[in-house]
Image (cartoon, rainbow, N blue to C red):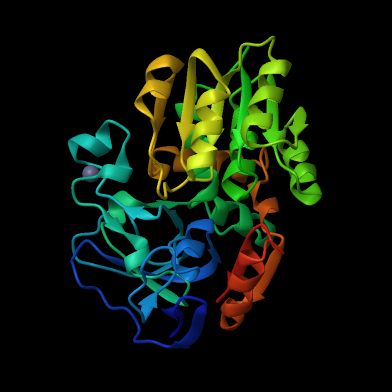
Length: 340
Ligand SMILES: [Zn+2]
């Protein structure tokens, strides 16, 4: 099969790799219909995370089941499936509490690499959710978004308690932040403020439900959010970047008693204790338990209630993955879909 591999920072190659095989009896092999590049893939690509190449790339996926192991009971060959970037058994105590991202048997799909034609999915019964049938082609990007960015934006909105009567601010205008806007809208938030200085992203934020756009960031961004909320700060703030600046911006833009949902993969974030103590906010976040939301998200996509696939503004053949990484690194693309 063909698969993308990171050799060194900035050096992505698509090459022939061995076809995956069933290793554990709980595995499934899927043939990918679509895969994509994540903002978090840019950390190793940029050399911020140490990458010991050659390493397989990709953790988002939708596709058709080719083969299942002997202990797989609910997933069958021929089904179209969506799964999370964490494989999870969906049966342990942590999974049953809704935190499949911290399953005691979890496997990170990025270690397997889904920017490929085929992928092995561990714990198939727990990880994969089958769609009601084969999707229309135009639904595939949205189902792919559910695999990570939509589920992650949804978790951010849920963690921040976005809902009726609440003013929500979203820090980060990447695919996750934009999906957070969409989620806040679906959850019934009254006012949704997207923080973005890029016109195409502002436009998509509005389409997804943003009622206001703020272009300022840092201290200025916080001041504007406070000004817009009677000096109090937002009820709910979604953090979808993962830097020191974005975390502080999120916490400081939240009113006392409010909620921060943080889902940007943290890099060198160190929160001052006095700021935390004085803020009187709820903090909840981390890697999203996407699996918890998949059945609901698939229903919303299948019924064409939401269209998160709009975050993909560039589609390339898998063999051109290197160009996809460049486009996202240079912010020429919000999110790149790869066609295996
Ligand atoms: Zn579990």
